[in-house]
Amino acid sequence: MALSISEQIYLNGYAIFDCCDMSALSLFAKVVQDELKTEELSCIHTFISRNEINKRRLACFRALNKVARWEDLYASAFQNALDHLIGPDIAIQNKLNLSIQMPGDVSSVLQMHTDSLAGQSIFELVCWLPLTNAYESNSMYIFHPDVSKKILTDLPAYEKQGMDGLFAEYKSRATFIDIKYGQVLVFSPTLFHGNIVNDTKETRISINCRFKNIFAPESECGERRLGSFYRLHSLSPLTRLALSYRDDLISFR
Amino acid sequence: MNVVGYVTPRGFGLLSIPVPAQNSCLREFAASVDLPYVLPPLEHTIPGSYMQLFTAINMAQSGDIVAMYSLLMFPSSLVKLNHIFELAVGKKISFYFVLESRYIVSLQSFLVEYQSYEMRNLLDYSSQASVESIRMLSADA
Image (cartoon, rainbow over all chains, first blue to last red; front, side, top):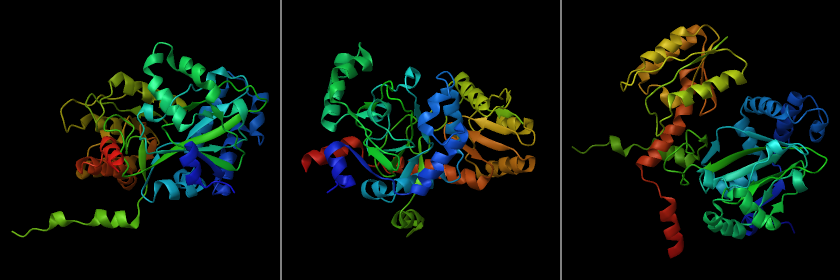
């Protein structure tokens, strides 16, 4: 029997499950297909050069972020995970990000990192929506929570070698995500992840965005906070009621 | 159509962004939407002054976008906000905020966006549990 989202998160720190709203997925895919003028997103490397790809990626990024109510659509694609892991009081990252990994493109490699080390709340959920199949080196790799903790403790020792040096030490323990179009991935921002040069014959395209519970702790300073990095997405009826409660207006004088 | 920039030497929220950095972001935004960039009025350092914001709004022509780094650079006074959006709606100009990635055309939509900051301020004011205190609870359990 397949593991539930919660069981997968508990065991691996990430979970793969069927997209909860295929129409939302189709709409996002259509926006990118229209922008790149093809229905075969995994083949764009046959007519877009590596020099040109970042300009095209930015055009797709802008088009995706112009989609009306993209926040609701993106949330609906991950609804099961949001219900199980975040709750009804939700903040969403204020933009969708887009990743395009064409075969042989060294300019799009994102080195090993964690989102929490960049200042994001350790309680957020990273939500990854592939618009193509992702597998082997065209996908992203991720480290198990236990390995991620070990890598974290090794950071000071590898300061001078940088993250590439640390990745070289641990790469044999990386898991490359194998996920089909129609499935989604969620993972903890505390896990080390990244990608390497795509040596498959297919391009991978994926969207990512983050959710957190509004009341979960976040950075006390800097930009990765509610307002500047996350925005209110939904409030539970109970929270709305609580916020409308005004005992401060009562006086017994 | 142009992008009219607006920059400030004052801090906003918990951020203090050097003016050249604000300018670079605005220039990049203008390039991303393929519009000419009009050099930005620099706000006065005097707290509460929004004179140069009004200068930017007055400079803008119909259809222009007045762009700035964050919506926290707007005044919090509802009277001033009303005045700003009356001018903006009358001139058919919009505002763009780089940090929040948002176009705003009305006071109502501005206030909706501002709710996220209000909630954050409320949580800060209420001294919500820190990660450290949650770790201690977890260790005690």
